[in-house]
Image 1 (tube, rainbow, N blue to C red):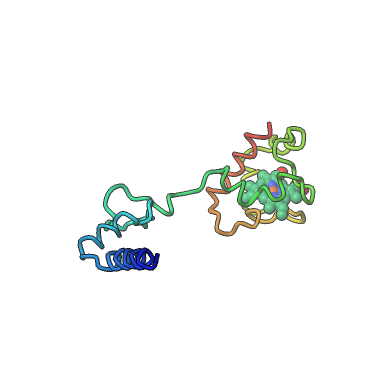
Image 2 (cartoon, helix red, strand yellow):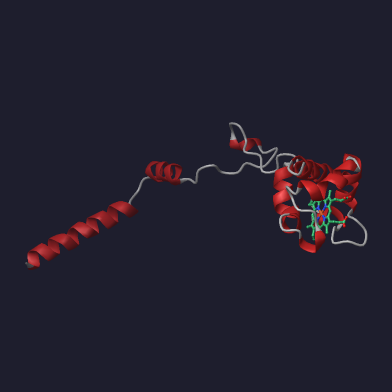
Length: 140
Ligand code: HEC
């Protein structure tokens, strides 16, 4: 019995030593295998090789902007916001023309809960226009 335990201990030691005692080649081999997948390559960084996963790839889609910045009020009608998909609530607004709605999106509607850019100060005008397009398309 005691011999058996010593044998196990010996085996454990052998395994431990083997795990620590790697050659440089083995080590870099293992590091390559456990490297995280899909590493982000920043725009303009050519050191990554292959097609770069660009972190900031142009303007966000209207749907993305809507989900991030507009849905909070327009999904539920907070503060009298015309609800997304509510054809009746949007009909008169859409009749004013897209440019008017773009301007409301970018500048807000004075005296109402519709603040400039829905509060998304990192959104470009272009992204707000896309969000307005998305809202119009889903509400007529
Ligand atoms: C804090 C709440 C809130 C957020 C966030 C918000 N809205 Fe609004 N929005 C309103 C309210 C309230 C109105 C109605 C204003 C009124 O009485 O004409 C409105 C109206 C609008 C209108 C119609 C304006 C018009 O001239 O008839 C557009 C277009 C619009 N919002 C776009 C957006 C977009 C795009 C976003 C996201 C980038 C957004 N809103 C985020 C509250 C919000």
